[in-house]
Image (cartoon, rainbow over all chains, first blue to last red; front, side):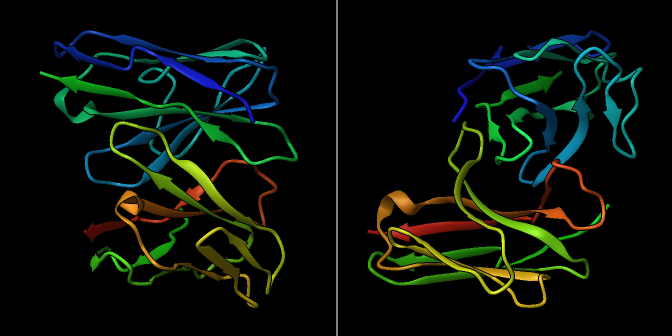
Length: 113
Length: 113
C-alpha cells in the first residue's frame, strides 16, 4: 500500500486568509482525492485531483474556493481560500490505483479563527 | 449526494463483548469497505468486499456484502480496548464507475476495560 504524507498536520489560520495543504505519495498512483471531515462528521468528497488537468469537483464545492493542483502522479495540493470559521475541518488526501482501494493520509486539522 | 445509513451511531460496551454495526443504502454498490479512524489519524482500511453475499474475515473482524448489494455489516468479536475508534462503512456506487468513495455517518465505539 502507498504511504501518504500530508503537510501541515494542523494549522490555526485567520479568517480571510488561504492555506495550501500538500499531499505526497511515496509511489506513483492513478487516483488522488480530497475529502473534508467536519467536526464529528463523516467524510465528504471535495474533488478528484486529475493529473495534468483541472480537478473534478463534487456538488457544493467550487474551484475558486478549493483550487487543486496535481502536477504529477505522486503529488497534489488543496488550497482552502478566503477562509471562514465554517471551513474548520479535517482535510484528507486519499490515493490509490484503478484496481485497488485508496489509502488515506493522516489528515490536516484546520482551525479558522 | 448518495447516503449510506450507518447504525448504531455509537456503542459503549464491555471488553470481551461482541459488536455489530451495519450500513444500508437505497442505491446499489459495487464495493463495500469498512474503515477505522483513530483520533488524529486518517481512516485505515479494515475489510473490502467485492461480491454480493461475500463474507470476509480479518482476525476478529467479519464483514458481509449483502445479497441485494445495498447493505453490509461488520462484526467485531471479543472486543479489546484498542478497538476504540470510529468505524465507517464506505462504497463505490455501481452506476458511476468512479473510484471515489461514499461514506457512512460512522459508528463511534467505546470499550470499557
